[in-house]
Amino acid sequence: MNYSEICQQAISIIKQTGKYILKERQSFTPDLVETKSLNSLVSFVDKTAEEQLVEHLGKLVPEAGFIVEEGTSTKVGEEFNWVIDPLDGTTNFIHGIPLYSISVALTRNGFPVIGIVYEINLDECFYAWKDSKAYLNGKEISVSQTTKMKDTLIATGFPYHDFDKMDGFLQSLRYFMENTRGLRRLGSAAVDLAYVACGRFDGFYEYGLNPWDVVAGAFIVEQAGGKSGFFTDKKEYTDGSEILATNGLIHAEMQCLIATFYKK
Image 1 (cartoon, rainbow, N blue to C red):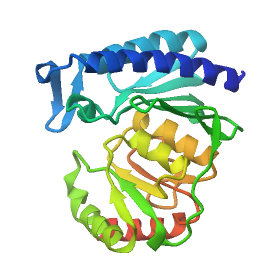
Image 2 (image 1 turned 60 degrees about the vertical axis):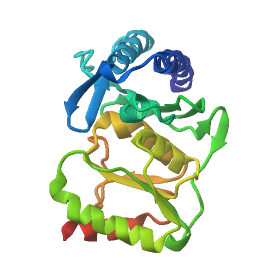
Image 3 (image 1 turned 180 degrees about the horizontal axis):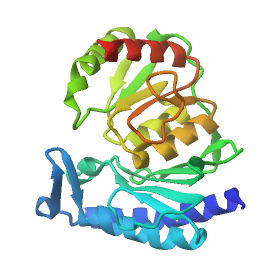
Image 4 (image 1 turned 30 degrees about the horizontal axis):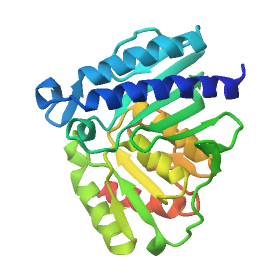
């Protein structure tokens, strides 16, 4: 299977869906919002975008199934599966904040072989495939070379459930506020990970996510020379329950710090 060719074809499909999302944003109103939970929102745009992606990506790898946020397909592949978030950053989209993305990965036997994150408003497409480098709009990217925590810029995300871990999370925020150049919370985990891959962020951590939030972005980080995994020593990040992604050079230190906070 030619992953490079499939990746390029998938990018074209994803960009077309991005155009649809931007078009719908022009006339979007708050009454079109559905609430999955207090701060987990969805709209017809998410669902229609996902339907478009499922339809067209399904033709690229006919045997592949789908792991999707909005449940528009229940097909499960024996070997290949597309992991899709059609609109990562829905709350930003709803409120007119121009930072949201499409996140798509192709997995083989549970492991990513293609990862694509398309930040729609800036028209920035981050991507990689198995055994490739990582790219942004055709240009090779790599993680930062920052080695000292005091020189880093760190990204995180705020939990919208599982508030039992909030004490540890707040302690981590205080530490990174006091010991780095700053913290950022963009509202799209896929974009956070893409920014680690191209060196804009030195590290990103969050808990309580899902596979479609992280698989593509974390794979791109690794292909860009970085490291992704759980808060602990476990490497698997594909369920999204925890994600720590860094340039690799600060990974051990950041992992140790976060694990300490979340044990308290």
